[in-house]
Image 1 (spheres, rainbow, N blue to C red):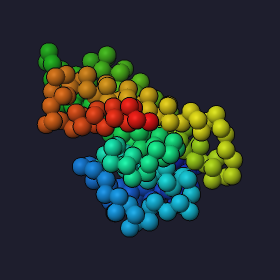
Image 2 (tube, rainbow, N blue to C red):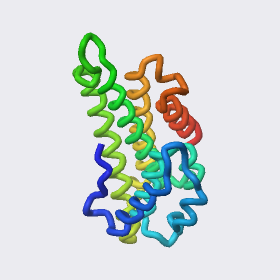
Image 3 (cartoon, rainbow, N blue to C red):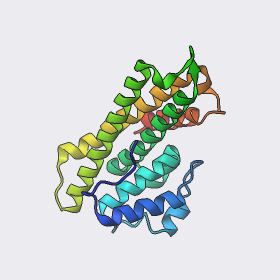
Image 4 (cartoon, rainbow, N blue to C red):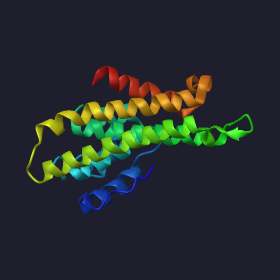
Amino acid sequence: MSRVVPEAVHEDARAAAGLARSVVSRSGVESSALESAGLLDASLPWAVRVEVAREAGRGGCAAALAVFGSESLLAAAVLCGAGEAAAETGMAYATGRVVFGKPLAKMPVQRYAFASVAASVEAAAALARRVAASLDAGRDDSLESAAVLPVALDAAWAAVEAALQVHGGYGYSDEYPISRMWREVAAARATL
């Protein structure tokens, strides 16, 4: 999945996303690091905060949601990041897991499942970017703003479910990162 910020997103968002990547680790999110980097400043454009939240979600959905709160746009961005990370984790596992003499990723059912997941996560991220751009322009489309969180939550859930399924029974083991990702998105699903 591409993590490139589209041209339509404000230039500051690129710099913020790069900075976010440097302070967000795969093991979790340090709110003090985000705060000291100035990435939680409410005066930042929404496009910047959405990209930061998306990157934070790649590092740990539950921790990022704790930092950003349940504000729907930022929570949606966190979930998009979690969905991207889950899809990448699932595809990486499917690429390395050989069954009946070929990698799982070469089997059509797996390719279609992850293509569908990738498309829904990218659509949710695009919706979050569009809502952010509208807010930055002083417009608020209530319908899109209301839809952004459930769309992102559904996309993230589909991504962790697909990744968990491709791992099979191993996916429930704490040895594999997908077990943590699944628990974090499941907790978000229960609380948001």
